[in-house]
Amino acid sequence: MAATRRLGLIGLAGALVAACTPARFFNTLAPADSARRPASGVAFGSAPRQKLDIYSPPRSRGPSPVALFIYGGGWDSGARGEYGWAGKALAAEGFVTVVPDYRLTPEVAFPTFLEDVALAVRWAVDHASEFGGDPSRIVLVGHSAGAYNVAMVSLDPRYLAAVGVDPGRIRAFAGLAGPYVFKTLAGPVLQRTFGLAANTDDYQALKYVRPDAPPAFLATGDADKTVSPGNTARLAEALRDKGVLVEAHLYPGLSHTDVLLGLSRVLRRRFAVHDDMMRFLKARVGLPAG
Image (cartoon, rainbow, N blue to C red):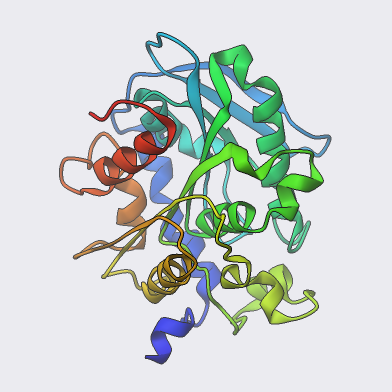
């Protein structure tokens, strides 16, 4: 039971980093979906890492919903250039997709990286229409540390309100293998990332669950040795208790990395993550299934 209430893994941050490196392979060598990249390296703030790439559907008959994909990496690593394949996967399903970088530890600590994600949403609200997007229909998708970022920005309305965005623009969020519940900061990276918070509740996603939160798709694998699947179970339970629409999946045999790579063109026929997530998100923004 205790394992479902904490990450419970020594050196969590280092494991998160290692788990995300296969994305580089998928970005450079694996076949990707058909999508356009109309812009790259667009600034959404003044900091060097406040830049983003945009991916557009290969065909569109009208304004498309907007997706932001937030990668993981233990809050101290990661780069948008490694996740073009993920941006293309979402764009191929009809989403104008934004893949931003965000500032990392040790340059910053909680909650600055969440503020960066909110600022990227602000950019999407202001500019997605220039690329065929409909900024009134936004979904957020994240993996690992990125899933935490997505959950926090979706659940705590203060981040979006601080940049002048109506939290109601977020139609849904998808968290893949996210660490949502952790009281113990094991390792120097987590200490640098969250150790300055006034109290441990401040960075717990469960604290911000609210009845008017956006619908959530939550996925994890039962073979995840990096982030306990109990994180997904606890967040799903808390959201349901507040009456929020939740679809939660525990995929047999999938590891921490598998849940992300299941979005790829190469593995989606083998893993159900892609089809399940896309079906859920499309229903929230009015895109036809399939």
